[in-house]
Amino acid sequence: MTFSSTIIVFSQSVSERSGDWSSHMCNIMGHLEELFTSTITRTFPEIDKPIVQIQVSKHADYQCNAAMTMAKTLKKNPREVGETVVKNFPEDPVISKLDLSGPGFINIYLDKEFLKQQVTNIVLQGVTPPPTKRRRVVVDFSSPNIAKEMHVGHLRSTIIGDSICHLLEFLGHDVLRLNHLGDWGTQFGMLIAHLKDEFPDFANNPPPISDLQAFYKASKKRFDEDEEFKKRAYEAVVKLQAHDPAHKKGWEEICEISKNEFQKVYDKLKIRITDRGESFYQSRMESLVKELTDAGLLQEDNGRMVMFGDGGEIPLTIVKSDGGFTYDTSDMACIKQRIEEEKGEWLIYVTDAGQSEHFKSFFACSKKAKIYDPAKVRVDHVQFGVVLGEDKKKFKTRSGDTVRLIDLLDEGCQRSEEKLKEKERDKVLSEEEFKKARDAVAYGCIKYADLCHDRTRDYIFSFDRMLDFRGNTAAYLLYALTRICSIARTAGVKKEDITEEAKKNPLVLEHEKEWKLARTLLKLPDVLVKLTEDLYMHPLCEFLYEVSSVFTEFYDNCYCVEKDQSGNIVKINYNRLILCEAVATVMEQCFAILGIETLEKM
Ligand code: ARG
Image (tube, rainbow, N blue to C red; front, side, top):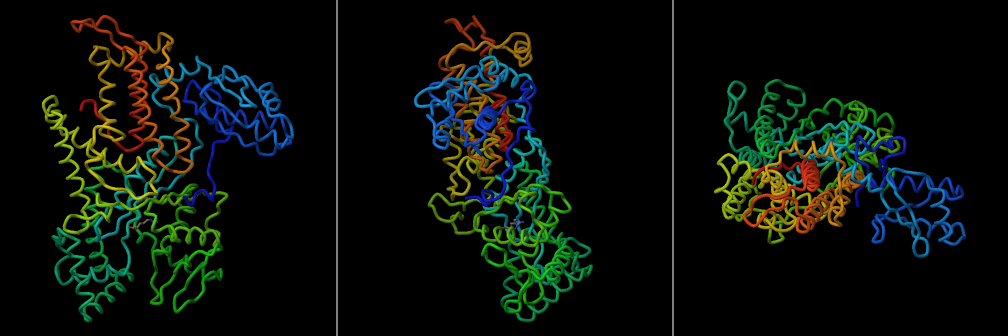
C-alpha cells in the first residue's frame, strides 16, 4: 500500500486531451474509458458515477463490461443496456466498430488505419507522450547522510527516484530533483571536534581524509569513551549552530569530502540531482517552530515539544528537550518550503519502507497545520523494501561489513566484462565499444534488477541473476535491442531510407504477428499513464519484456530481409523494417525512462 492511494491521484480529464492523434500517441484504454464514461452519463443520467473498465479482449481488441453492473442499478436487462450504449456512441477515429456478445459485453474493434498511423508516427516523430497537464513536481530521492556510507538502500532510492523523474520529465512535467542530504545534526559536533584535533590547520589546508567512514568511527569512539571530548563536541555543535566561521568551515569541509564521494556514484550511474541538505532549512525550522507554537499545535512531553496529527499517528518531535531540532522538524519545514516557495503541486519522497510511519506522521501534521492541503497538492511516499544478499540475509560483504557502493559498482563492471568475454564480444567490438558495452550492461543490469519487480518487496541482490542473458534482464533486453537495430543495418538500409519510406507510403500490415506487434507497441501510453497513478515502475519493465517477446514471435514468422541460398539479399520488406524501427524506438524510450543507456553494438 502506498500512502498516495488515500490521497489524490491526478488523472487526465477530457479537457487535457485532444482528439488529434496525429501529433501525439493516444493512450487508447484511457481514451476508451473516457468515451464510455461520457456516453453512459449522457445516456443514463440516473447513473451517478459509472464504473467503466476497459479490458483486453480475446474476441475483439478490447471490451467493456459496464453494462452488467449498470443493469443492476437500472433494473434492466444488461443486453438492452449494452445495446442502448452502443446506439448512443459517438463517432470516433480510434474505433471502427462496437458490438455485443454474451449477456452484454461490449466488444470494441480499433480502427486499423488509426493503428497504422500511430505506428508510422512512432517512426516519424519518436514516442510522443500522451497530453498531460504540466505540474511542478519535487522529487526527493537518493538523500544519503554526510560522513556516513551511502548504502544499498540509498542506491535503491537513487535508481527508483531517477526513473520516476525521467518518467515525469518525459510526460512534460516540471521536475525538481532534490538530494535531501543528512548534513545537519549533533553528529557534526564530534566530527568537528575530532577534525580540530587531527588537522588543526584544516581552515587553511583541506584535510586529506580519504576514508571519512573511518574518521567518523574514530570520532564516535572518542565521543563514547572520553568525557572531556564529549563536552567539546557539544560545544562545537553550539558554535556551529551559532554560525561561528571556523566551525562552519570544518562542517563545510566534511560535507565536501562526503559529497565528492557521492558524486562518484552519481557520475557512474549518470544521475542528475541537486543537493539541498537538511541544513538549508535551519532558519525555516526556527520560524516553523514559532508558528506551530503560536497556533497552539505543540504540546509538552517530558521536556520535548511534540505534535500530533489527526489520524492517531505517532507524534512528531518538533523540539528536543535540549532545544535542538530533529528529522521531523526539518521535514515539516521542508514540506512547507516545497509547497510555498517551490510552488510544488506534487511532492514525491523516495525512501525505504522503514520510514513510512515518519512520512504518515509529518503528512498528517502538515495537513493539520494547514501547510499542506490534499485537495491542491499530491504527496507520495514512494517506499521500497530492503536489499538482501543471496543468502537472503541483510546485504553485507563476506567479512560482514556494509558494502561500499563504489566497490559494488566496480564489481558489477568486472562481472559484466567477464560475461561479455565469455560471449566473445571482445573479439567483435573495438576496445572503446567493449568498454562502453561493459559499463552499460553493468549499470543497466543493476538498475533494471531493482526496477523490474514490485518495489515494496525485499529484493535479493544477485549479479549472476541480473547479468543473465536469458529472461527478463537488462542484459537480455539490451542485446535484443542491438539485434533489432542491426536488421536494417546489415541489409544496408539506412534509418533515413526507412523514414522516407514511412513518409511516402502508407504502412501495410497484414500478417497476424505484424498486427499483434503493432497493438503491443501502442499500449505504451496507457502503461505510462498507469505508472503515474501509483509510481510503481515494474509494469514498464514487464511491457519492455513483452515487446521483445512479441517481436521475437513476429521475427520468427515474418521475413524482413529475404536471402537466397548463397546469402544474397533478394527482397527487402520495407514495411517490416518500419515495424522494426518502431519497436527499437519504443524500446529505447522505455530504457530512457528507466535511466538505462542503450548500445548500438554489444
Ligand atoms: N537521509 C535520509 C536517509 O538516509 C533520507 C531522507 C529522505 N528525505 C526526506 N525528506 N526525509 O534515510
